[in-house]
Each structure stands twice: as structure tokens, then as C-alpha cells.
Image 1 (cartoon, rainbow, N blue to C red):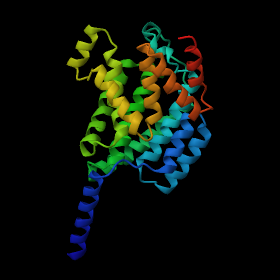
Image 2 (cartoon, rainbow, N blue to C red; image 1 turned 30 degrees about the vertical axis):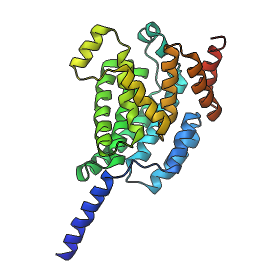
Image 3 (cartoon, one colour; image 1 turned 90 degrees about the horizontal axis):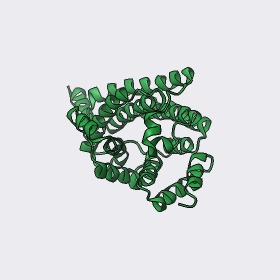
Image 4 (cartoon, helix red, strand yellow; image 1 turned 90 degrees about the vertical axis):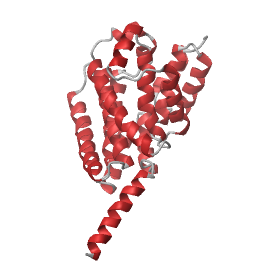
Length: 276
């Protein structure tokens, strides 16, 4: 009876502590993300593989490895060029890209393993931060693949909403989980760029659309985020380009270019800003 009582207390303590902590801000995991932003994908995969061995029950290693496969594919396909975002006609008229089926398989393997681990954790501890963040990330990454690679924007919209639900749950547990503001911020900002009739329809289907709030959420991740901080700064640079705030875009892209010298995207965008 005593051991059973002790185990109940331990489970309660784990659940309570989970509600009071942030998602893992592990330096080794973070190093893998930084390698990924610098397009050093083999290094990133090695770091994530080591981290998964040491933390086999944590979904964050798997979803991070999945992100590395996705970013590698987006880089190969040139799908992160800001012209896709700053030129609406070009974005809407973009052709479906020719993805590498092996890369998609590797991406989905990591995503599915992350989802299995996260769901198992959430059945026992519904507020566990790593599991909530991993599910939000997983759905957001799948939305990126659907939209940027496969041009399935409607499917991407549904995945984005699901991702936001998990981000909302995490932020309700702890508003200082600053990375979790990025997904909702992207939704609010990008959908605010749609034509007015479509915005009305999207609101009726449950989408959140508020340009200023979206920018504010992206700024939170850019200022205080961990894994997604550089990506938030890239998106803010894109927003600045759309607003013709070339000085702000130059500042953000200059910082990213200095930090990630192996990623030519930032240098290319800076070159385009010359004379503006």
C-alpha cells in the first residue's frame, strides 16, 4: 500500500512539475538547430541522432531531426526564396515542386515517431511541455511541406489550425514558452495578406487573422525564442520587405547572414536590397 501511495505521489509530482516548466531548452539540441539554419544538415542529423540515443523517450529529438530533413529539401528546391512571399502573384502561380520521395519518407518517419511518443506522454500528462511543443512543431512542419513543396494550401491550412491548438495549450500552461508564439503568429500574419472576401471565409472556418497581432507574436519568438528564434527573424525580414521597410529588413538579414555564413539565402536577399 505504501509503495502504491508513493507511486501516485510521484506521478502527481511529475504532472505538476511538467505544468511549470518550459519545453526542453537543451544546449545540444539547440546546437543541432543552429547547424540546420546554417545548412549543415549532416552535422545537424549527427547531433540529433546522439540526442535521441540519450533521450529516446523524448519526442523533441525526432521532430528536430524531421525539421532538418524538411529544411534540407526546402533548401534544395529553393522553396524559401522570399520572392515567393513578397510577390503574391508569383506565390499563387508557383508550380508544384518535384520533391525527393526518399527525403519525404525520412521526414515522415521522424514526424510519426515524434507523434507516437508525444501522444503517449500526453495520455498520462496532458500538460507536458515537450510533448505539446513537439506536436505543435510536427503539425507546423507538415503544413510547410504541404504548402511549400506540394502546393496543397487547403491541407496546409488544416494542419496549421491543429498546430495552433497545441501551441495554445502549451502557452496556457506557460506563457514563457516563447517558441510557441511563432506558429500562431505565422497564421495571423500570412492569412491577413489574403483578399478581404477570403479573409472573411477563413474567419468563418476558424482561422485567426490579425496582422498586427501576428507580427507581435513573431517578435516575441525573435526576441526570446530558442529553437525558432532565427526563423522568426527571417519571417520578420520578409514582413519588412513587404512593407518596404528596407532598413529593418537589411538589419535582420545582416544579422542572420553573419550568424549563418553557409546559408546563401540571407546574402542573396541583402544583395537585392542594394540601392533600396
